[in-house]
Image 1: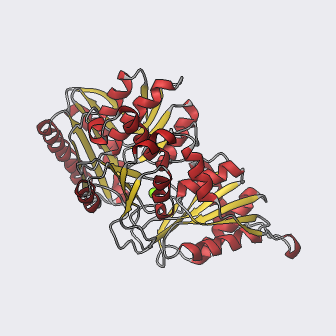
Image 2: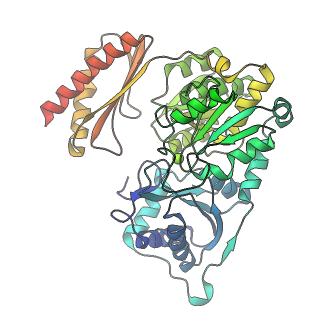
Image 3: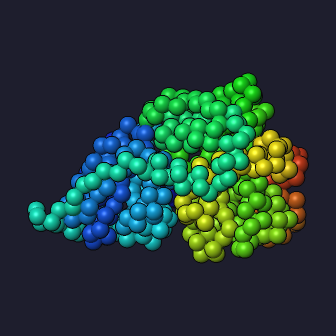
Length: 458
Ligand code: MG
């Protein structure tokens, strides 16, 4: 992969790493790559969003590519309209859950799937070559506006769940879009399902004043307090561009994404003829166990929602997901679909008469520990190479060694994942076990071996 694109799209600090000329040239690169056609273009809540989109649009127009401006949208809505309208590509100006000073762009194909690393490379090599198509003055692209993307997306989501059943229950739901793009969708979708909706951090604001954009236990403390305080049935939280969703139980527990995937996968497998569930290497073992009990099997991919999409598409899987809060329902489309995930949970609650807390208790919670050790970028490869031999030797109960992304070791009572960080000079360690003591012991041993390897190579 080149230096422009990261795990998904371009994500950089505005001012020091990214400027408008880059946006303009990225627009020219995509227009040259497509060689005409129509691109739908949106932005999330970032302060740089509209401005970067304007420069990007100018680049596209200069190559003779038409642009449809969709305004401020959640990333999944942009992906949805790209596919449903059959545009040649979709682009959203976003930096996902990164801090507010970041900006970037993410590309989508006509089939609603994010650009694969190969497609990104094609755009990047045009960007590097500066050999852009230049349309003459009388063959420039034209710009149009679409202002119905959110309503179209919401309607499509509602038809994919039992909306009437959900409406009968008049659930009370607290929505926390974290000042991100979901402000324009989730509260209204819940209202349309006859829920009583309270929204916190509900004004779109690119400075993210309410909380850190990444939804986790730490950043969702307010939501976790307000749900039980108000007697609500469910809490729903998103990241900045709203391709992730994290749920909170009626008693205020922030539920890890892999457990929610397990809960929904179990339901999906009841009716799906394909029994494959795709997830990333860092998901809990409980997902495999739940899926196996439901007659299915899991396939693991490297981290990143595009990796899950690619594998879902390849295996024609029943569902895909990432523990960070990504849910992919291929019968709808191949992009993350947090809104349908929320509806499916409400539907399950309505059908079973059980609370979200009691439903999720059916999926065991295994202790999972994460840490990172500092390691200079240029040493990462050598350290990982050394660990490939050393780490499996150390754990005598190792059942399997997986190298799909980093180094994964399957143990009798859990697993270890050691991988170089894609964003920081660090090696990340994750381990899971059946008990907290086992997890701590495994983490201690792994950390020592990784630290030794870094020390030796430095
Ligand atoms: Mg995101």
